[in-house]
Image 1 (cartoon, rainbow over the protein chains, first blue to last red):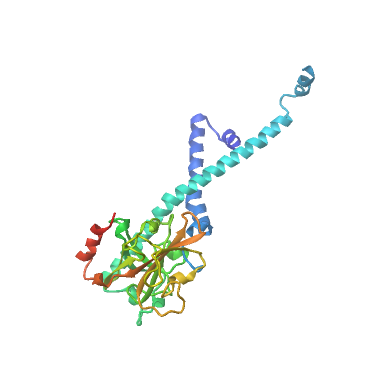
Image 2: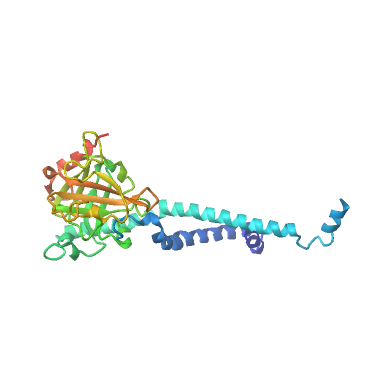
Length: 53
Length: 269
């Protein structure tokens, strides 16, 4: 997968590196600010009340 | 030897069985490494990002409460009768200080214990009593992430002060249990321990007399619940405290009364 992405990024080494870094940051931001906040309430660590409230 | 060479030779570009196996194995490997990194990133989210946003929300709730107080409004008196059900959910009702957990340990308690309420700060179980009332003022708070107000709830010892500031009054509760032998599990004298670990379904710990359904309350108690052990939802850690009537003070300004400020220097090591 990573090989395929790298091969399909246009430009030279510098350009490819920049694009790869941007891609990584975009994926991290998506996870941190969209996916994790959405998933977290369904994980057990956020349950702190008694009596199922 | 030549026999094998002939088999591998025909077309160097065509994928061999070995290539396909390598391709699949590499795919699995990359997927596993990626998943591992995602889990690591989740830890970063839980420890830093969720706390960052929780603190922002907490600051808002805190400022709203301070503003309400400054303007003469007391959320605890939401509507005549002062019944807790009339207080809007998610709104700050009181401030919480625990000297054992540090000079800067301060949280605004909000009304309600839904996920949304607890995202703002520790939340008051709406069906339980209000600060200073006879019965049980029960609150819940996150242990890990979301500001983690109750991360160190297990550090509390018998006799530790838990300070609750409302618009009108400073209340000091003392963690129950035996101070003499530092036994949090001691249920002397009223059948309520300082700390207990219970099943998540055990709602009796927030009753007016904890663990004693139907009994009419005579004491002014406070109960804090959070998850236990850390990072799981298997159990709940519950800390009970009882009011120290000698330290109840009217709230006249923004600064802590001297007797309450003094509690910070009295934390037993």
